[in-house]
Length: 171
Image (cartoon, rainbow, N blue to C red):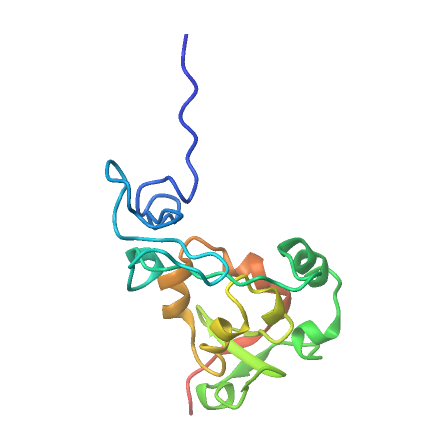
């Protein structure tokens, strides 16, 4: 008879498996397999001494979201088809880096991931890491930072309803 495989989650998987960083809740203090100096900070508290990016074993910070700002609420919002998700645009734009740089406020927050430009303003309040983290890529190409911290996330599925255009080089 075959035994059921052990359960694996992002907290228990080895680093690099399924996007896991190898981080442990409460720091890495107990010795044994998987122990290290990585930690997972939830709600801004941390008890480890991690550093660097999340995929490198650093601290992952999440913030308490306001009521109505869960992942399920975002799914409902993005499927609503509201024009403000795409900044009121009805067709896709060709956006240069200099144009992108003009949109870096909370009310007008654009960024680029993998050559696609998104209006992040409607998503800011839903981001589990908080608005401040997303504002780090406002008005610029955020692909590198996104891949360092969220390489396992399908960005196209997450914020597809906010896509406003494609990046093009300056002329």
